[in-house]
Length: 246
Image 1 (cartoon, rainbow, N blue to C red):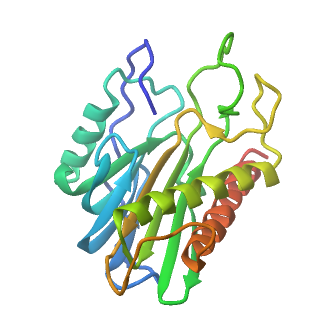
Image 2 (spheres, rainbow, N blue to C red):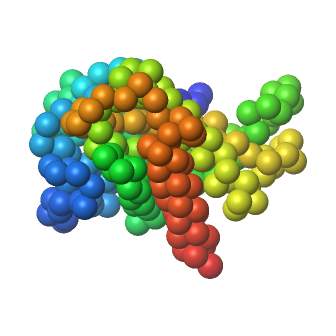
């Protein structure tokens, strides 16, 4: 979520009443804890990551993955600094973290798993489309404010080369577009089908266990597993948001 011209820090991150770490069916060593301020995934070993997050960007190795909640009025001038401060409050070393933020209620987190034979996939999504955008629409005259984010984490219990990580990001992005189309989400300014929001964030994380693969696109069982998990998770998170608005 990029900064706007008006500085407003989020409310202090809630670190009390945190749920205990629970193991997920995906792989071995991946756990999840959450509270009002953050969804926190932690793996017992660092995972190979490709990320667009402000903390932990690009290619790297991370064992902690945090999705922090901010209120809808958040407009910090320094979102990376805010993320680093919130990680420090939780005694997490930013050097081994991927951290992102969202105004979507964390109760709308959706988890979807998929089997790709020798590899398994877990998609974790918080989706808000208040700022849905068609990336192909002309930007001139676009008056919208920055609000609404699809944060997407894809965990893969498998060994992916760097090219396969990029391939996995493509597969996740293609599935996101399909999910938005299936939900009838449109760019309110252009009137065309939305392809995402202007503040979407994506991270791919792989255990690097098993036989290496250079591919994770739609021509592979792994790519289809990624696509299916992401598609279902986005639809589930959006359905939760719609139900919550009633």
